[in-house]
Amino acid sequence: MNENRSLPILLLSLACIAAYANSLNGDFVYDDVTLTVLENPFLNGLVGWREVLTWDRPVREFTYWLDHRIWGTRPFGYHLQSLFWHIFNVLLIWGILRELGVEQWQACLGPLLFAVHPINTEAVAWISGRKDLLCLFFELFGVWSFLRFLRAGVWFHGYAVATILALFLALFSKQVAVAFPLQVGMIACVLGGRRTLSQKRVAALLGVLLVVTLALSVGSLRVVETAKEALQRGTYYDPSARHADLTHPFLTGWAMWGAAVRLLLVPYPLTIERTFAPVVSWGDLRWMAGFIVFLAVVALLWRFRRYPVRTIGLAWILIAWLPTSGIIPATYLLADRYMYIPCVGFCLFLSDWILHLMYRLEETPRRIVAIAVSLLIAGFTFATVNRNWDWRNEISLWSSAVRYEPSNPKVHFNLGNAYSDKDLWDRAEQEWKTALELKPDYAEAHINLGSLYHKKGELDAAEFHYREALRIVPDYGVALYNLAALYKERGNLEEAIQWMSRAVEHIGGKRDTAQKAAMAWRDLAQLLLESGRHEEARKAVEQSLKYNPHDRQTRALWSEIRSRQSAPNPAQP
Image 1 (cartoon, helix red, strand yellow):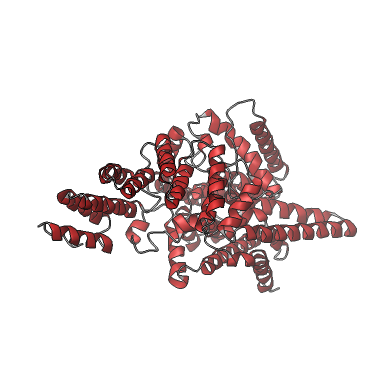
Image 2 (cartoon, rainbow, N blue to C red; image 1 turned 180 degrees about the horizontal axis):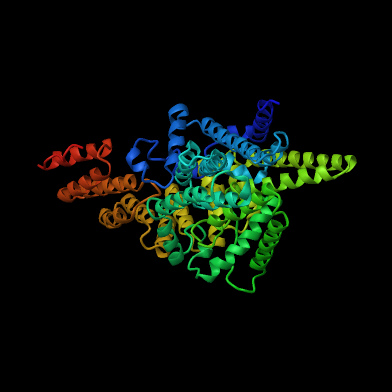
């Protein structure tokens, strides 16, 4: 009998739209502004494709390029593409369940739970969260291709190639795809005798996937280098976790596991920043609780070993969690977006368990369970829609974070930045002061307060905060640059030149180091010119042109210097 696939596909798509339609009106927030979109040097034409291909997530950059070509800097289009990727992921989960033999309407429950689960909001409603959407899409596509490959019976079948290609694209979407060979291998083991291919052919494909993963991890993805840096310096994002020894990440990983499972079961509160102190003692109950949760999952795996969907779901959670487990403290210790990929396994397990439970029940209890599941889906949808409103702009986002993490200095700092962007200076000042009360060595907060006082003309207060930032981070390029600007404003050119000479060596940014260096060298040239040191000014402006040879201001400054002395024009780029 022919099945009408369009109705399940339509239902699942509408569920995604219902949960995330209000996210389409969201603004650019957080990394969308400073890293991925508005200040992305690739989108602004400052770097080309050749350099982008050396970045760790070029697939994501390509999708942003498409958005930028169509929508410019209108966030609606960026959100729309993210929603499409989420819909694709939901439909792929449905397709995988169909490949596993689940009836088409029963196969809708797992994807439906995933479509509206509130823990996924950060990955979907945040434009910069697209890396997780893309990574999961290619992982799911790879799993779907692998399931088709198991039935194909021919080694050089297109599904084998598609599985390998999916791995490439997943890895260049986000590095957590290093777990993909384990996920595929797990599925092959669970299905066992249900496959038609010989074990040698399956093992050969798994070997190729493993070799590709190892090669890319050691090479372009810098996984090994990141791990070494993490073990030497601790995470770059959680100062409380720095200088952790090998024992601390191990214990913290177990604690993280317990917290991650709790978020899957009870997705509240949801916040962009979470305070999670690393475990530094064997007596800390958090790692023990996480270990007990792990043992419970292993027990469930054994208990339900005859149920393929449930087994795959539980094992998927464990494997997908590993790259962000905190065992190597190279990232945030805990973030909502980290649960997007593990959430697939949770929804597979829960849906399969519910369906089998309903099958065994009598009519009345079955209706009660159906009502409970409907209420769960409705509650998830409401929570997701409500969370989307937090992502509508910077102020709402960080205000929600302050509500749930009032003792986290970073959320106060970023809320201050949001107020500053809207020229709400008094509120910004209060939030930055609160951040310093919570973390006195917060160099960035000193910088922002110094800049605020600088704008107000309170130069002594500004200098104090700039120097405090340098006391904390002696080679802080922004502090050096701002001090140079301050002394120029005071009319002390020699002092300004000294600070700017240091700034040009240490100024930088996430992706715009060249642009900032060009600006600093140009400003140094201007200071030298004003002080009558024409030859030094010429050398400084030439340095600026090396970083940004097309900058009009820099070339105008070169022309001014040339008019004051006889010097050849630098080579045209």
